[in-house]
Every structure is written in C-alpha cells, then in structure tokens.
Amino acid sequence: MSLLTVKLGWRWPAAGVLFMCAFWGFNLGVGLSERPDIGHADILTKAYYSLGLFVMGGLDLGTPQGGPMIGRWLLWISYFGSPILAASTIIEAVIKTISPYKWRFRRLKNHIIVSGSGELTISYLKELRKLSPKTSLLIIDDNIDPVREEEFKRRYDATVITGDITRSYFLAKLSLNNAKKVVLLGTDNFQNYEAAYKILELEPNLEGRILIHCNSIRFMRSMTDSHVAKKCINFNAYQLAASALVQHHLASHFVETIPKDVVVIAGFGLFGQTILEELQHSAEKEIDTIAIIGTDAKRRIQVVDEQLKLNNFCRREIFEGNISHPGVWKQLRDKVNLSDTQPIIILCTDSVEDNFRTSLWLKRKYPDAMIIARSYLPSKFAEDVSEQNNILSVSINQLVRENFPKAWLTA
Image 1 (cartoon, rainbow, N blue to C red):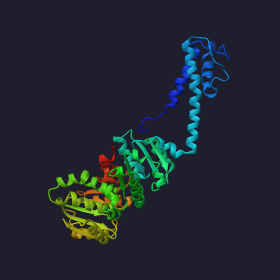
Image 2 (cartoon, rainbow, N blue to C red):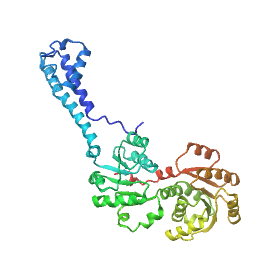
Image 3 (cartoon, rainbow, N blue to C red):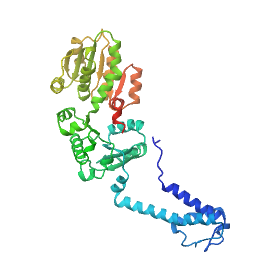
C-alpha cells in the first residue's frame, strides 16, 4: 500500500459532475430536438446518451427542449462542458507525448530533488515520508531499474525522470528556484560534486540546502576546502552508520561495564575506519584497548591516522589477516585478554557470511562478550539467528536511517 492516497486529478470529478448534469436533466423530462422522447426513456438509455455527450457533444442529438428550466440548464452545462473536457484530455496527452519533460516539470514547486536510485535513496525516502508525507518529490538518475521506478512512483508518490543531473540544460528545467533542497545520492562521487557546482551556479540561493553523499571518505575529505563542499552538506553513509552504532548500541555497554572496555574491530574497511573515528570522538574515556583485524590493516591505519590526525587515546593493537583465520585470533589472544572482560567484538567486513559465521564461533568461546555482526541490508534471517545466539545483528542501511538528521528530512 502506498504511504499516500492516490491522486485522481481533477478530470474524474469533473466528468462525474458533467455526466450527472446530463443524466438529471433527462430525468427531469427534458427532451432533445432529434430525440424528443428521451426524457421518458429508461435509465440505461439516459445514461448512454449522457456518456455520448463526451464524444460528439449534442451534434447528433439536437438541442435541449421541453421540461423545466433547471433541467435544460443542467443539460446545456453538460453540452458545453463534456466535449471541452474530452478535448482537453486529448490535448494534454499529446503534449505529454511530444514534450514529457516539460509537462512533468511544469507543476514543480516547493519540491525536493533527489539524484540516485540505490538503497541509500530508498532509506532517505522512507524517513522523509515519515516527516514530510506531502512534499513533492522529483527523482533523477541516468539508469533506473523499471521495478525501482514503479516503487518510487507508487510507494513514495514521486515523479521519476531519467537523465544526467550534471547537464546544465537538464538542470535548467528542474525549477531549481522553487526547490526546497537537492539531495545528491548517486554512486559517482565526482558526478555528485559536479552537479552541486552547476546547481549553485544556476541557483545560488540553494546554498546550505544541497546534500552531497560521497562513497569515498578519502575523496570527501580531500574536497573539504573546495567552494562546493563549503556551500553544501557533505556526508558519508558509513559515518552516519558508525555514529548510530556507537550512540544507540555501544554507549549503554560502556556505562554498564565498570572497567574500561576492550573493543575489537574485525574488518578494517570503510565501516571499521569510521567506527574507530567515532569511538575517539564519543567514547575516548571508556576504552582501554582497541584491537584491529584486517587485510592490509597496518597500511590502512597509517592512512587513517594521517587523514584524521587520530591520537593514541588508548592502547592499540593491529593484526593483519582474514577474520576467518583462527591464527589471527590466536595472535590477538596472546596480546589482548578477552576471557576476563566483557569485550565488544564488531565483525564488520564486507562479507556477511564471514561476519555471521565468525560471530557464532566467537560467542561460543566468549559468552560474556558483546558480539556485533554487520550486514548491509536488514535481514529477518540474520535477526533470527542473532536472537537465538545472543548476538547483535546490525545493518548499515538501518543504522543510516536511524541517524538521518531531521533537518535533512524537512523543508
């Protein structure tokens, strides 16, 4: 079911009114110069001739005659209105066929423009519709799956356009001067910044109301001092997810445990790196040791330290290898005590299978540990397995939704 009621438009009610004008005119005894006895005909006949006015008007029936004045007036209203309504519908259909973009953009006002059609867009729209159920939506992408396009239209009541949002001519048609905000969620990072630059050129008043998502944290940080970045809101989904994970799930554990905590980040990709950054900002005084496991972990931690200027706020141990390899965990146990504490172990590689298999193995070895297994999309199966084994299943998608600022979702 759609979150919004289906919009029928004004023509269906107008057609109903015009039909009833003709039908009641006939019921009041009004006849026609070419069909004088129609006022005494049966109901189906009157309904048939009432519908016929939308096609031929009264050209084949003659003019209203006889009956009360009110009946003739009702019939005359239908005589003029029905063919005009039918003609306007045909003209609109022709315009839509000849110039679909112009027709779709014609009524855009106080709308939100969203670029991109991936899972991040779905997450954003779900939260947006909770707070702004009636805001007009225009979704643009250069390649939209037909099923996803139908979902945008039916579930989120959005207008969907296929096109390149970096094209200046295309941008000029989007009624940017009437837009509430622009949300750039495409997968091409450079394209998102390019589109933001051109949008600001066309409509400088949108400064501060353009959201740019960047998949690459390194690229986003390298763009920090650019004019575009300073005039827009820049964000990364993994950073939002890491913030939600620490605030909604880890903070309470830090409070409940008396000694400082041991945290294991098993998988040091983008999510693992943003978790480390968030822990420094939000839980620096709560942590004794952070152990990091990952392929190429030593090089990656050097890059993170250089970019973020992270300080050594706690003891830090780095282990290179795959989280599925028992040898890596043996190396970790030799340096970090996991048995006499209540450690937090976050399995956050890109492999959901490895994360959940390893989490089950670790829970058997360390039953008092807080084990967290990461996936990208929510999974009922993963939630069920996690609940059975006292493991916390989190999805990047869900964490992002939990942490969208309200200002991004309202006008």
